[in-house]
Length: 201
Image 1 (cartoon, helix red, strand yellow):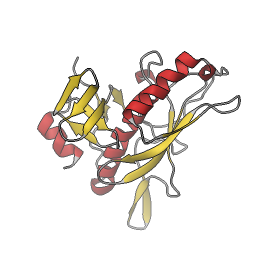
Image 2 (cartoon, one colour):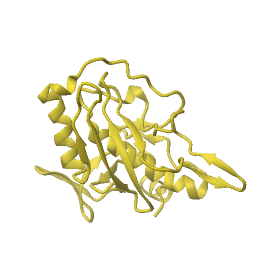
Image 3 (tube, helix red, strand yellow):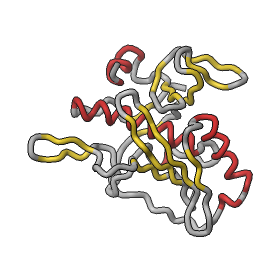
């Protein structure tokens, strides 16, 4: 079922969830001490409010190695292990911030992505690890996907959507799964099915 069909059935403001493999699902989720569970797909992560856009790449203006603070780093590590256990964690050092590599299976395509934390603790950078640019052929020309930064990285959310005291790398990965689900539909229809998610509080 396409995302547009799901949105027309559940409504534009419907809560969205992402499975541990990266598929976006709606409804059928219960809450327990163990977390959120979908009736068919098992453990899921809620997709926090966000919007897609694009344009200039954000600048990482930070200089700290904040990930050397175990409390700050462990929050991201634990969240990723729980939400996306198939992702591989690569520790940060003085030159590079920590990141994760793994596959997102939208149900209509599998994408290997990198989720890179930032020195300024801003919205992580997310890149699809692929030899081909994100887009689709249209006759003799190539149409670039909407909602990409100039570098080709995914614009998974507006910078203002990110709260480093609340969100983690798992939040960014769920946003990336949501982006990729929309992209797989856009590739077929040339219509982006959603500009993010804004669930009524």
